[in-house]
Length: 422
Ligand code: DSN
Image (cartoon, rainbow, N blue to C red; front, top):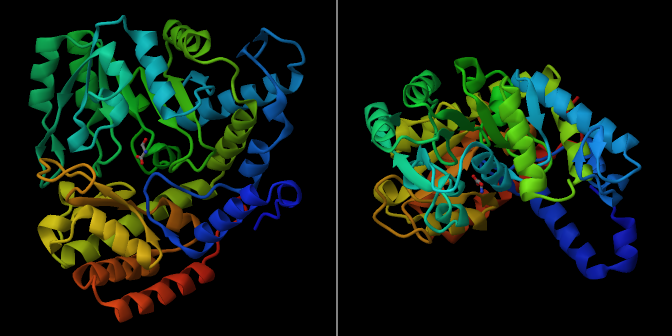
């Protein structure tokens, strides 16, 4: 628990909000698959004096003086990122995943060029060219989908046909609501055939790749990987762009991030990234990755045993997407609300071929990174999934919900959010 002594003295309103969030995170169960708990060391770096410093440029080539320590932390973050993901170049300055993707697009394309990415409704991400985004006005986005929603298999024939027809400059592999491994070799083969860059957005699974429990797109010849650092990777809220080996691409990426898109890098966050990458290089992180998957499999079993349809038929990673409306007659919004009542936080989510709306879709998305950080294992994951199903089947039963709320609170008390992982 943080004390926030200075905030308490000078700003009661912010103090109250911080205390409230501390207690929410401690006493509730976080199942949003893109969220996690960082170590105290990461938070110390994030809250450090480096927030005071302007450092436009890159280590050894800055526009302002006084860069001895900013250079040191940024170089540490770069070196550790390259070691973690087995590549030659890293840009650790993107403020988050969306700017990382925007910078990557501008580095590798000219306005009007085409990107081939996964359809949002089949698991892709807003920044992969959703019509509501600004980049959609600059670049042309075409899409691929799953061939079979029951297995999650991507339609690689369609992907190749669309690539041959539209000649994209970038073929993008990556997702924010998809639970299966991608066949990276097929992406690379098609990219080479049409002369496109193969780019992966590994934001969701970065920690699984770092932990050696998911495939690394670079092992298949991907040119560039973008990511966030705060999901399974368990670092501060931030972005990352990696380049496998091409120096010219790395130079273009650096220029596109600064001065192309951003000004002064957030050096406090970069220091926190360096700390988090150091933690991910520790052998314990591999155990963490393995347990995330085991816990997700445990939850998968409960949902499948209860005949709840899982998109993709199940999971190979940290997340599950359940069609609660089709299977239990409960909408995604209702499910989110009723689970929130008992202390379980997750998010409503559209499912492939959605018939409802984005604000009240058919699905829920949930995952195991945060509960695994708390030290929970298969027994706890199984019990949580059982509670979820039971509440969703009987959502008006107040007494049942009160009992489960107490059980979730007791579970969280038994597995406090850890302060350190190494
Ligand atoms: N909002 C993130 C997620 O939850 O997947 C992606 O940007």
